[in-house]
Picture 1 (tube, rainbow, N blue to C red):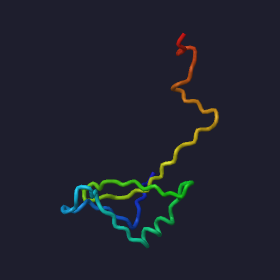
Picture 2 (cartoon, rainbow, N blue to C red):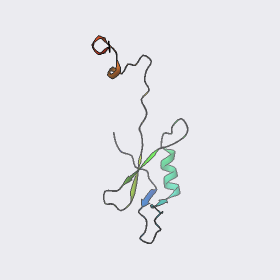
Picture 3 (cartoon, one colour):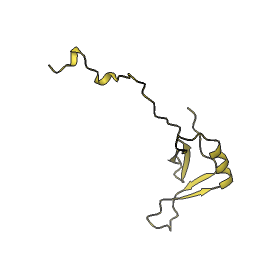
Picture 4 (cartoon, helix red, strand yellow):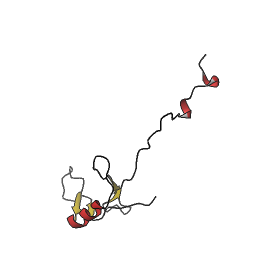
Length: 91
């Protein structure tokens, strides 16, 4: 699976003069981000999920599209880990 990073959004660590409660800052280029966002598939409720990742160089964050989709269990699905049979009956 290929990683997709959000275009038009940047995250930075707080400045040295920032108060303790400031964890960072975001810069959004509205037109670029809006265009990228319009290309993404939304959830049933209209959301696009984006993971916030710390950059390898420690100089801020990057924003990766979260494409995880919960797997639907089909009817009659049996998880073998809790299946009862003659070998694991308690009596």
